[in-house]
Amino acid sequence: MPASAQAPQPTAVIETYVAIARAMYEDAAAGTRELAKRVDALLADPSDATLGAAREAWRQARVPYQQTEGLRFGNKSVDELEGKVNAWPLDEGLIDYVDTSIYGESSDDNPLFRANVIANKRIRVGRNQIDAGKIDKKLLERLHEAGGVEANVATGYHAIEFLLWGQDLNGTGPGAGNRPATDYSLKACTGGNCDRRRDYLKAATALLVEDVDAMAKLWAPGGKAVTDLARSGESGALAVILTGIGSLSYGELAGERMKLGLILHDPEEEHDCFSDNTHNSHWYNQVGMVDIVRGRYVRPDGKVVEGPSIMQLAEANAPEEARRLEAAMNAASEKLGAIKARADSGTEAYDQMIAEGNAEGNRIVQEAIDALIAQTRAVEAVVAKLGLKISVGGSDSLDDPGKVGKKG
Image (cartoon, rainbow, N blue to C red; front, top):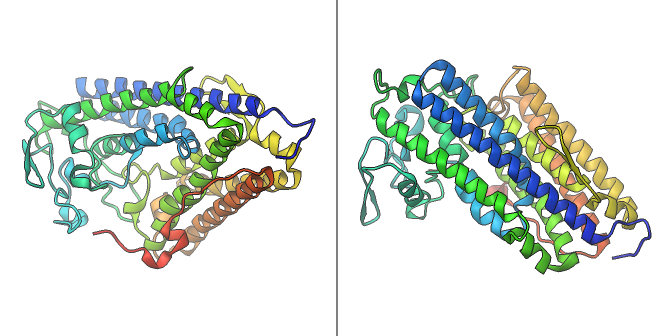
């Protein structure tokens, strides 16, 4: 790496990264605890008001968590927990009742496509019968990715999202899921098995609290993410920072979360598909990436965590590439902001934007994808100039679109 008197010390940049990571995950953990309180209130008195409050707590819990995702790639201990916390898309028929005219009757890829653990006290997974008489954390962990099928998502934000909203039966038309609060009533139960649905929501929420708290502990002093980063050395740690940004920006966000759904025009490939919150999830991914690169994170209480940043290191040692990265991040923020503004205004939700025949919506989404790809290329230019090495995660939807087809 070229030397510069104005450059911050790599150790200081890494310290800022760790401080921001710690704060982000602490805030994400606090969000899950608030969600748990609202879920308890819903179960104590199921009503439109308590269900609405639980849904809003879920949305708010997503804000800090989505900002953490630029920390996921490159940090193995973080990524190992992510699958329990934020896995998607999911075959929701594993969990609860579905409208089969929309969802389908069966899947060649997933024997548990309509297992409906809430309605059934015994579940067959391969040759084994699982006793599902008691719905608790242990059962949900056993069912998560059961049979080696990734779509068997039994835990995490999106399982809870489904339980709070229910299926979005609107396709690429207006409207989100509309599960009634009485699905949790013991006196006026709708949907059947309300006692077991209550148990599932309670257990899934408790697991989410535990799992996000475990992520936060990885970044505490002496935590595994911190010690792993230290063992990787200065150049290795800087590479981890930029790996996280490049891989989220390209393969995950531009590819799996955006381009795939746009190619297929399929709302089932929308990240927050039950709640129509996808525009916020994408936006806060970008906000988090910008925060990490610029070394400045504003916490929900208004306190600021900041310090020497990877951007400042690039400005001192790779000024041209730093300017390119700054411009690319601004452009990506603008394009993702346009998606958020369109959804927030009520013009149309993200699943409507990716609908077949919606030329304007498709264009807005594609422009954001293109900006994210440019952002990744700018990250790679900084990496090359600083003499670092990273491997950016890819996506068939970007790298080999011919392989992309609808899931069974």
